Amino acid sequence: MIEALDLEAGELARKAGISIFFADGEALTGAWAESTLRDRRVFLGRALRSLTISLPRYPGDRTPILDRVVPQWVA
Figure 1 (spheres, rainbow, N blue to C red):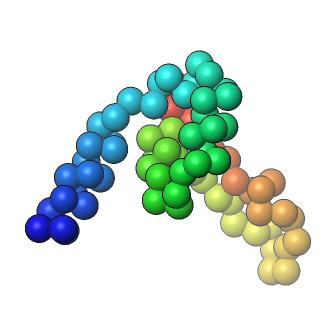
Figure 2: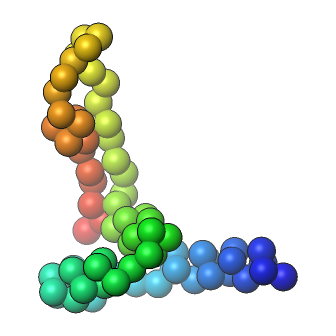
């Protein structure tokens, strides 16, 4: 039963709109600060269309990972 409820909660979270947060940065900051890791994963899952991480240019490449990450945000 718990597993079924977890699945249902996950589905509801995916269907929930987060557009209100795009208009209000303070609301987003507050929601992020008060959220659990699971909530943050849901937020990111709803806000990101894709996330591309490029490969290192050569073995031992010390390019910071954030310079190799390209998010595509939901519009």
